[in-house]
Length: 143
Image 1 (cartoon, rainbow, N blue to C red):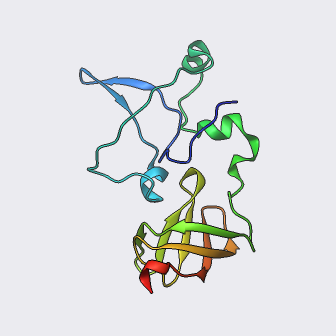
Image 2 (tube, rainbow, N blue to C red; image 1 turned 90 degrees about the horizontal axis):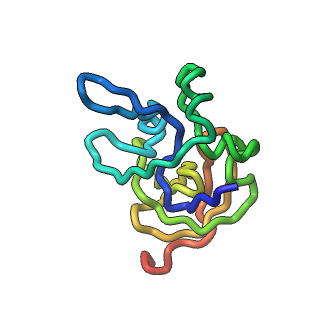
Image 3 (cartoon, one colour; image 1 turned 90 degrees about the vertical axis):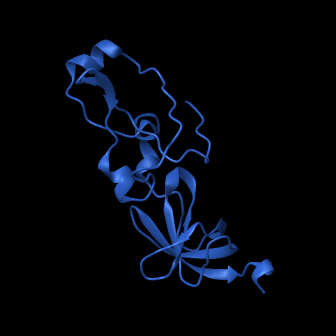
């Protein structure tokens, strides 16, 4: 199994297609919808070979996470209720809550968190694409 570092922002499978003399890789919409990637930003892209190019040519294209193909439990959130985690708040959401990301870009919402704060949080509620946490230990630099 391939080890995937936490620093990756996105990982998915896609075919290269030719369109109007250019070669294009479609980004799955959920990568933008879940704030993993942003429109009009520049990213480094790594290309890995697939198991079988022949197999892919005979199947209809469907974006899917490479992690999901290799690890059947990858659709399980990477956090558990009651778990205490150290996170860094990256941004704030529409409601003013802090937003941190952990493994595989999974989002943790932290009320009271501010961008740049490094906090210990307790995971209180876990959903498929997001978890909600409370601050256990504030950023000592913010005191």
